[in-house]
Image (cartoon, rainbow, N blue to C red; front, side, top):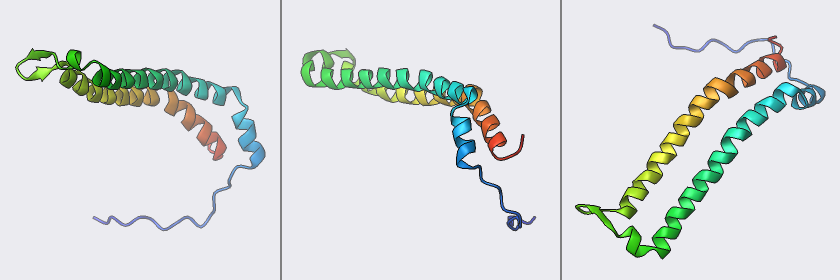
Length: 118
């Protein structure tokens, strides 16, 4: 079984002009793609930064609270620290699903039109 890549195409792809890029950038479809991205990414970014800063501030100024033992040697600080990692992975997973369902189809449609496929 050969794993060689095919030789490069002899025909060069036509790159869109500046006017075509501007037309797409000003289109309603591209605006909807941007709104869909921003309405998801910005609120989650703000929420996560607030959550992270809360953890940092509690660690610095609420040592007694953070040192409260919950069970065994597990304290509030440890649980909140692990929750930081969990929320990071949950947000990444959630964004991946959002992008696959809402962003990628719109972006692929725009891209194929720009490359002359539609």
